[in-house]
Amino acid sequence: MALRFERLHKHFVAEVCPVDLRRVDDPETLAEIRRGMDEHAILVFHDQPFTDDEHLAFAQRLDGALHTKLGSAAIQKNRFGNEALGDISNVGADGEILQQGDRRRAYGLGNRLWHTDASFQDPPGRYSMLSAKVVPRVAADTEYADMRAAYDALPQETKRQIEGLTVHHSIAYSRQVLGFEFSDDEQNMLKGAVHPLVRTIPRSNRKSLYVASHASRVMQWPVPEGRLLLRDLIEHATQPEFVYRHQWRVGDLVIWDNRCTMHRARSFEDTTHRRELRRVTTLDIPATV
Ligand code: OGA
Ligand code: MN
Image (cartoon, rainbow, N blue to C red; front, side, top):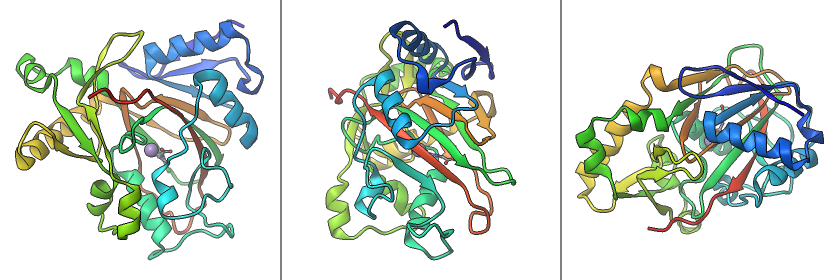
């Protein structure tokens, strides 16, 4: 089946049609989607009414083994009984909307910080595939930043300065910024991971900045200088020219490459409006730092 890729942003993101991903399992179409990911870093598919099993199966057909160590596993049992199926929603196990003061809600608010999925683990996440089930009538969008275009636009001097640096990523660090506290047991499950700051993405061979709100220190630098550098890089990469904003429709599947994009949820009245999405993320290769 020949796919059409329509670019939605100057630097990245393409909408793909016509295709029913539940039925895609021929090597040619899967290869075409992977090539699309290499080029555009984010692909948007509308009208994909996946069941959870179909979602999990498609993710493995496209990109192999699944990530099962989501940060939320340290604080609550998975609502779906499958650690590979991420619950990106504002509802609890009883189906009720989480309210102010609820610890699960406070944890979920961390998605509003710029981040890349599971960078506090090794291996981190490679492709994330987010499927929209219930979308509020108010805007509850997700923003994405192209970390390849952001890298390309850095001054030569900065590129030289950051080459070869490695960074510790910790979810305890990023959640602390919002006042969220982990117990000692939880912290023990979430020790963080070290990854290169500049990554070369296989196949496209493009360089990318690998930073996130989880990035807590530059291993080769003193803590304050490292943190300032990381802040500067995130500020640079999230300028409007590198950012795409996705407005969700029920049935959307968005696939992003965590190695070369960051994302964040935008704020909405989440204690009033129900929003339910499910995320399946594939496993990247281990860091070689
Ligand atoms: C995610 C995520 C943002 C959102 O699914 O990994 O960060 O808008 N989602 O829900
Ligand atoms: Mn995320």
